[in-house]
Length: 398
Image (cartoon, rainbow, N blue to C red; front, side, top):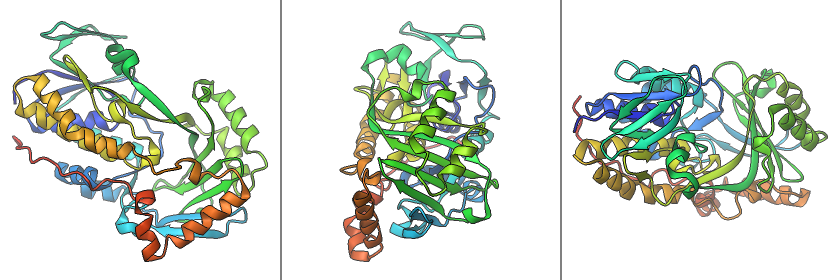
């Protein structure tokens, strides 16, 4: 691999994964993260298909399994908590609504950090404020640290990447899908059990409760909404909005709303996809959600982040000129990202009915999906295309 200095913005999942593979190819990366430490918030993420293959090649699959949430599946329940339909984690070959390997985002991020920090430089509590591509280097200004120059810069700081926008600006299409979701952690109850529970209320409202491996419960509240900027409101205003929308919705929603006020990891966002005409410009590239966020509805975000990092590092290792590597990275991965972004017809509306009749119809379809013939017909709705990519066999230095 041509020796290069590489700055990565973001220490979530894609950033450390890229640092890992760069290190395996002989290059030490520097990562800058705006948070003062690894972020502890976030919900459960899936590891599927090519993404799980990448984890296996990293030598981390056993560690990830040891930290899995061990959800047994998901139950769709009515207001009295009666099960309308259920899917075990092994349904659809372990690639259905609940994958065989589910892990908290914070645990995955920490495992990746621990695997990379011996050979990568981490700069916590700082961020990139300016990038200047001179053609030979990228001059970087940080909010707190001294200016530095790098051969390459990679934005891996999420769907609303500030680093990406410094270079690509208005060319990025952040496309809302019509759903807004709040995530937070609440105290557990014995009734939470080992299955995730999903409840639909009228008006396109959805609530979920998911057990984790830390003795707490992960809650979410979602509602259908056109883009209107709810994600830009202050947290107190967001919570007030949720109380107005969900009060009286039944099931365990009063419990969720009561716990919301004291949750220290509350986060609300408009569910969106990121589409870019190009994933690189000069000496700057993007990876993971910053480049091709498929949204949590796809079940593919983590797999795309890990796979994209693997491919980008591999192409950089096999091309003397960064522009050739960036071109090959995009050519190889874009079809996979495009498939991931093709949400099933009607999503998210089909999963968040507005009427009682719509909810009954959805439950009827979900119950039928447990039958083999019907399940096969519903594969495109319930099984993400995680297995539709073969990892290139890049040689490694160690």
